[in-house]
Image (cartoon, rainbow, N blue to C red):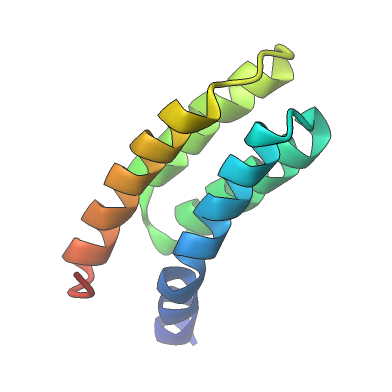
Length: 91
């Protein structure tokens, strides 16, 4: 069961990152927060602590009604995603 969760996490990681960036790009604060929380929680459960930490920082910014720059988030999350996928033997 745990292995299946990790596999699904890795499979869905690019789509979850895209959702975060898409929501930030649309300036939808509520949708952005929902996307970030979803990615944070699944990252934490999967042991992807770098992504979890990054999402926690975004979540704090969104809680303060600050909308992070989507391009910067894409860059940061892409780098973190590549590291996760590399460490999982998927890169």
